[in-house]
Amino acid sequence: MKKTNLVVFLLAFLFIQTNNFAQGNKNLFAGIEIGSKGIKMTVLDINNIKKGDFTIKTYWSENVGIAKNISIDSTLAKEDIDRGAAVVLANYKKIKDELKVPDENIFIVGSSGVAMAKNTKDLTDKVKLLTQKDLDFIDAQTEGKMLLKGCIPPIDYENSMVLDIGGGNTKGGYVDILNNENFVFFPLNLNYGTITLTEAVNKKTRNNDISEYNNKSFGYLPVLREQVTAMYNSRPVALKKEKIYLSGGAVWAFYTLYNGVAKETFNEFKLEDVINYDAILKNNFKKFEEMAKTDKDVERVLKTYSQKYLISGSNILLVCLEAVPHINEKKLYFAKEGQIAWLVSYIADRSEKVKKVY
Image (cartoon, rainbow, N blue to C red; front, top):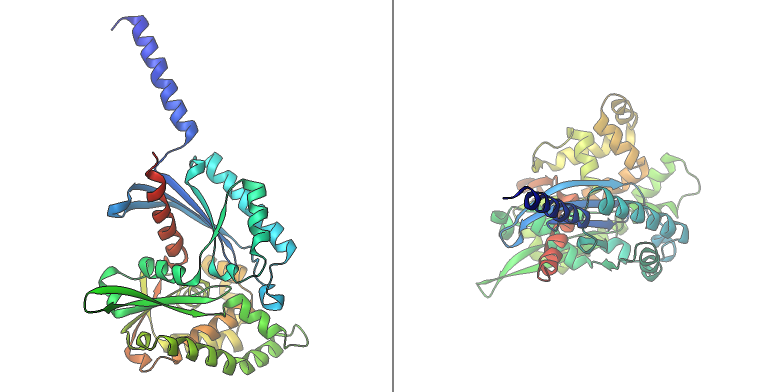
């Protein structure tokens, strides 16, 4: 090859590589989830979606709760919408400019807990104004199906149910065989989550004292039990499942504070562990505060959730488990990656559709 041709070739190659870099890696996909208690970002490197060949490149979250006003008047507060949308914009720019994810591969979604608000259009419009991106909301049934897909090993699908305790609601479900051949998903949904239950109890308190909150929270348990019973009565087959996979911030907080940071993808525990944790949480919270001084994982939990939120999450977890017959004969697991499972599933599903246009 002549010298001039070599120079032209190298310049052309450099131009192509630079252009590809500027456009971003078309195998990279990202999702921004606006949840009740926080906003989560996930970046995937997808090779072959049909074979499930993708890896989580990175994920992080920001503790921005926008759903606390839902339990007051069923709406998202304007200041929460503005703050949440600003966080979405900042992370959208980071994903596109720093992580080089192509703009068409970035999805923004709202969880089912946030979708409960009457004024979700205000949030959608704000996000669209700032990012020029559409905001989709996922209903509890779809979210539960995605959770099951991401939180339960396929070999256990038929034998298990999944529950995710979020900030705005609790959702999940199970699969069962219909007509001896078809697997069908049956959703479970409870309109209480860590934040919404806390705000419901706060309405009944006269001051900010934790002892009063504890008393009012205890008095609210019959309402919670009634709702959980109704949830299970709507899908009684769920109570027959041998394994229960649990995820969500409340379960992460319980497992981390009581057992230490989860080391496995699926971490087994007993109802007795939750009962003991609940007692410490309500009667000896200083123990966790002392642990946080030397344990970064405990510190992270306490920075994410106040004692009130932890109490509410624990109450939901306890009531959901105690309502299951023969619970001590069941296998209980904390699904470590549950916090991003439905979002990963959503991105994977959407990425397959996007790739068809390439």
